[in-house]
Structure formats: structure tokens, C-alpha cells
Amino acid sequence: MLRNLFRRVTDLLTGPGEATDELFEELEEVLIASDVSARVAAAIVERLRAAAREGRVRTAEGVRETLRNQLAEMLSRHKAPLAASPPAPPLLYLVVGVNGTGKTTTIAKLGARFQREGRKVLLAAGDTFRAAAIEQLQVWAQRLGAEFVAHQSGGDPAAVVFDSIGAARARGCDVVIADTAGRLHTKRNLMEELGKIVRVAQRELGRPADETLLVVDATTGQNALAQARQFHEAVGLTGVVVTKLDGTAKGGTVITIAEEVGLPIKLIGVGEGMEDLEDFDPAAFAAALVP
Ligand SMILES: Nc1nc2c(ncn2[C@@H]2O[C@H](COP(=O)(O)OP(=O)(O)O)[C@@H](O)[C@H]2O)c(=O)[nH]1
Ligand SMILES: [Mg+2]
Image 1 (cartoon, rainbow, N blue to C red):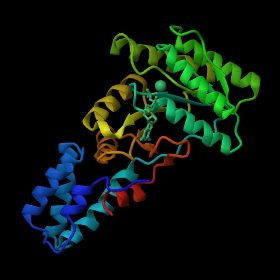
Image 2 (image 1 turned 135 degrees about the horizontal axis):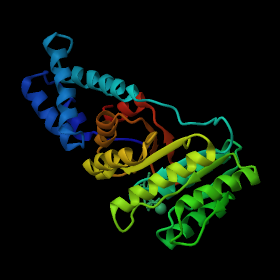
Image 3 (image 1 turned 60 degrees about the vertical axis):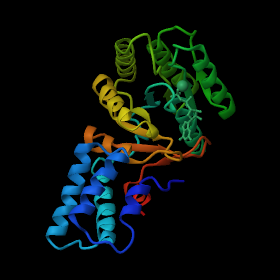
Image 4 (image 1 turned 180 degrees about the vertical axis):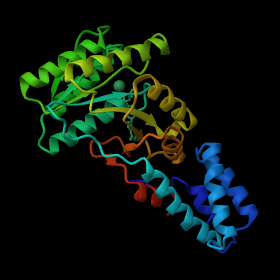
């Protein structure tokens, strides 16, 4: 469950205060301290100041409510549903992101969700850089009772994805979810490798992958923004999954990525359990940021 993501913002905007210049200055600082980028924080506060100038907002509580509405509106501007019905099976999700952000866990959660919907799932071990990554995904596939395709560690991940699409067709699977490496010898290698996966998937499917999702860890703040920019430039993302919003995350990462990169947030991770993956709901998220 989400709570207290914007604790300092909420504290500042609770109680009998007036909507003064000083309050807006402090709000801007607290937004930045909550992982909202400086540019986006300035834009948010400028709109609130305008509302105060026009007499639409007079108190701190009024600022809080206006801020909540403004955040919900900002976040819904980039809203897009998860691809669910491909023109021809299998539905293909590529999952990318740096190590430790929660890719493999998110893949398992997504697999479990598709299975609950009655769909047959295949997990593809495209993180061939580490043998442990292949084993970790295999354990999840076994637990879920999902199909699984892997090659040797060190193998070509594009070939794993190619084989997975073929195996899904042969075995009547509805959905392929492919893991990828989060680190190679160099960042350039990684982006080239991911680019090749994207191209091979497109050739084999006759359309781009239905989703190319970046997984970012909400607790990493501005780093997550840099990751979103880099991966989007390299592979053309369709959306972002923000994980670890149950922990010490301050919430601003979600707003910053949506506004600065213009990518839809599609899913959020709110724990380590299989059920801890939620569809992103802008209004509910804004209400969790600023209750
Ligand atoms: N609290 C919390 N932990 C998570 C979440 N998603 C993943 N993790 C944990 O983050 C760690 C790294 O996850 P993993 O899926 O292996 O990351 P990968 O390297 O990107 O594949 C594991 O300990 C996961 O249990 C989440 O939404 N909340
Ligand atoms: Mg992994």
C-alpha cells in the first residue's frame, strides 16, 4: 500500500497557515527534496502561485487540495493502458532496466497476473550476462508453472527472445515476458544488445514488441530519471514500472519521469510479494502523495 510518499509536503500544507510567498518558497524546496526535479517543482509551484494571485487559493489547506488536483492532472496526461490484445499471439513484453531495480521480480508478478486472467505465460531468460539471473527466473517459472526458455549464460539474448517467440507459438502460449541484462561490460554494449533484441523481436513478430517496459527503483531519485532518458533513447520505451514505492521512496520520481521524459507510468511495485504490483492510477497516486 502507498502512504506518506510526500510526507514533508503534506506536513507543510497541513494546519491553519496562509498561502504566503514564504510557503511557496518552502514548498518548492520540499518538492525537490522529495525527488521532484527542480524544473518540474518550479512549474508546479508557479501554477499554485498563479492560483493564489487569482484568489482561487488562500490557505495552506487550499494549496494542498489544488496541488493534489494538479498532480493528478499532470500524471493522467501521459496515461496509457498496458497492451493486452496483440493482433496475433504471443503478446510480447520486453523488460529492461539496471540491475537491482526489480526487473525479475516484476516479471514474476506480471506472469502471475496474466495467469490469474487464465493466460498461458512463457518467461524468457534474456539476462544471459549472469548465470544466477537465468536460475532466478527459472525458479520463478517453476513456482508459477509457467513455460521457460533459456540459453547458456553468455549466450545471445536476442536469440533467446527469437526462440521464445517460436516456442510460445509451438506451445500455445499467450504471453511472453522477456528479462534482459541490467549491466554488461560497458553501457554502450548494453544499449547495443538491447537494440538488437528490439530489432529481432520486431522482425519475428511482424510488429514491435507490445510493451518495452523500463523498471526503475523509486528510491534512487534523480538516477531513475537519467535511466529513463538513456533507455528511452536506446530502445524506445512504451512505459515505465516504478518499484519499491512501499519503502523509503519519496514519490517524486514518478512525477519527474512522467513530466521530464513524457513516458506513461504503467505499473507500480509496492512490495516483494506476487500480488504487490498495481496498475498506475493517477488520481489515486496523487491522493497518496498529498492525502
Ligand atoms: N520493497 C520492494 N522490494 C522490491 C520490489 N520489487 C523488487 N524488489 C526487491 O528488489 C530486489 C531486486 O529485485 P530483482 O527483481 O532481482 O531486480 P533485477 O536485478 O532488476 O532483476 C529483490 O530483493 C526484490 O525482492 C518492490 O516493489 N518493493
Ligand atoms: Mg534480474
